[in-house]
Amino acid sequence: MTQLCPTCLTLGFCRRWLIASDEELANPHFIIDVRNYVHELDVTPGRLLDFLLNRVSRIDGDFRNAAGLRPPLRLDLFEPSDQQIDAGKFEAVRETLRDWLRYNFGQAWGDGVQPVLFGEGKERFRVIATLVRTVYWHDPRTRMWGVRAANDN
Image (cartoon, rainbow, N blue to C red; front, side, top):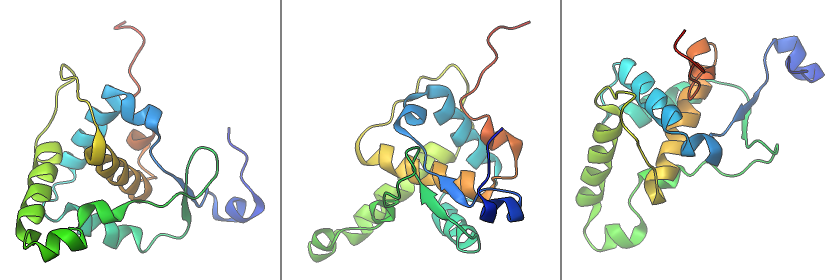
């Protein structure tokens, strides 16, 4: 059982929202569980980020990593850079992002898949997983992402 600080004890839960770790993102079961959970939310991939940000804005607390530090949550990965905008690639970048969201969260994924995240996709996935876990912290399924039974009995 986790000990809560006096502030969180009065609330009944911790206000420090845990950012998805590199270890979690290396676990294929974690990736599949997040993808399937988000797919079950029945929010179109094009509206997913706005939906989550609207929900998170109403939650008190801050984001921390496992070491208790506050690294930035890289929301800038979901927007075109100034250079891309200046080059007239705004719509192309937005369409690429919509395709990425549709690919990752627009369908259910089976356990037989071995997903791998890398580069910007890994950091985008970290943001989505963190936001979903924060918004749906009360759902016990979010605490079991990546966990599988040791045997089939």
